[in-house]
Image (cartoon, rainbow, N blue to C red; front, side, top):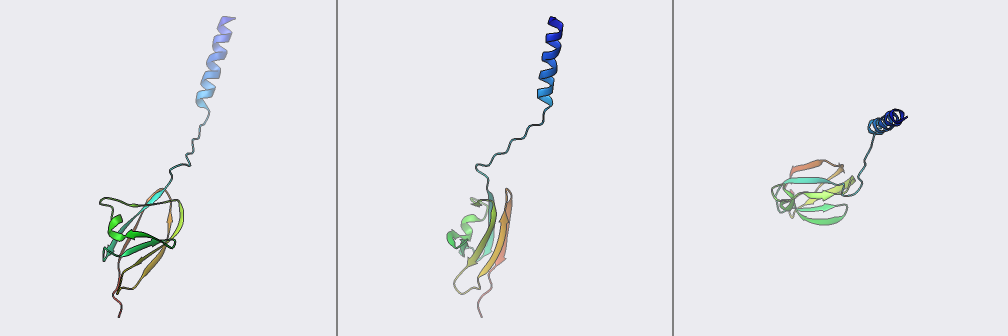
Length: 104
């Protein structure tokens, strides 16, 4: 009798270890954007909100963290042509590398 209980217990234990497990974390998910822009003091706007200068997010000290999804990024500087792009941020790092052209 004891032998059967022991075998049954081992079978249950082994079955529970073999069951697939999935863990999904939904908190703190974000991606990042690094800017390599000339001029480096160009203003960066994300989804209509000014977030600072391009040099603030050049990857050497800081990156721009954004929630997952599509975002409209605009880079502008006085006397230069604005640049606008749509990026899709997931849990990776995106790069925006541009040189703003002088207005003619």
